[in-house]
Every structure is written in C-alpha cells, then in structure tokens.
Image (cartoon, rainbow, N blue to C red):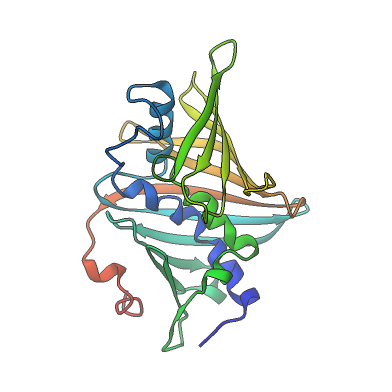
Length: 260
C-alpha cells in the first residue's frame, strides 16, 4: 500500500515535536573533540540543547498540541500522545481531531511506519515522502548538535549575554549542511536556530518561545517553526506533562504497532 504524498504530509509534520527528542534520548558521544573543547562554554551550550529536548538513559512521554497557521489563521490543530524509548525510538498517537484519532506512527532509526485505524496495513513512509514539504520539519527537530555537527565558529556578544555558534554537518548527505545557533547565556536558553542547505540557502528557522520546569530542570514548552519557502506559514508546537517511564520492547515494534 502506497499513500499519496499529500495525504501523509500532515501526519508526518506532526512527528516534529517527537523526533527532535530522539537524539536526546540516546547517549551523548564520549569523544566530543570534534564538537567543542571539554569544559568549554560552547560544549555546555550544546549539551543543554540536547537535554532541553528530553531525558538521558530512560523512556519518557509527553503530550503535545501542534497548531498550523497560514496567513496568521489556524488551518490545523492536533493533539498527540508521544512516547520515546531510551534507544531513541518514537511512538506517536493522534488523539484529535476525531477524523484522525487513533493514527499511530513508529520511528526506529531511519525507518518510519504509519498505522491507520480501520486498515490492516502498516505503511512504510519512503524517504522522499518524509522530506516533502512540511514533513522536513522533522529533520529540523531531530538534529543532534553533539552527534552530527562540528563547531566552525563561536562568538559572544560584547556584553557577554549571547553566544552565536556556527556548525557544519559531519555527514555530506545530511538535510541541513549548516546551522546557526543564537543562545541566551544569561538565562541559559536557546533563542533561535537557522537551518541551511549546502549551498547556503535558508530552509527552516526555529524560535524557542517558552520553557517549563520539570523536577528542577528546564524543558521545552513552546516553539515556532518557520519555512523560508512558505513565507506566510508557521507551525507552533506546545509540549506538556513530561513523564519518565519504562515501556516493554514491543511498544516500539512494527508488529505491535496495531496493538498499542
């Protein structure tokens, strides 16, 4: 069974809020020499970028609301239940709207599988379909600054309150060859990231709007994603009710996707 790209684009775009947590769920590499000098301000910033997005060494879950706007008008609203495994696998279930309720998507490494209620099929989403249009948001948020990128330049503003970091991908096939990060050192929070192609074309911009406290540690609460190819569109993602947990292995298996 093969779904038309337009039919699955909305579903895949909902994965944005979960796939950006996968890298954080995995262990941070022990060799960070290619990223930043141990003990440096830059390394501390990149580590915080990972763990604002999740937890290390445990399964966890959160609720989320995804709002899509066109010309400042809401054109889509979804509520999701998201589970992330310690290995970085993700299971996302649509809670609303009612017309999409029960849709579940499983992400394991580079594989993405979609289950539609009322169908006996579990559909594999092709790489082309994953990066089409709004689906490429998932690639933005799945970025691991520690695992996949090398710091090229870093500079603090004259007042010492902001750090600007430029990174390049270690993988020539990565969707985003370059990332520019603006970070608020005074409040220990990201301000904005800009994601570019290898030719230097800006594709996506993320603005980090608000944060919540979870057991004494900051977690992302609200972000806005802007597509440079669609000037009048934006996706707002709100995350809440972070919970550490422990799930059976079958929760994140293709065979169990229909049963969860």
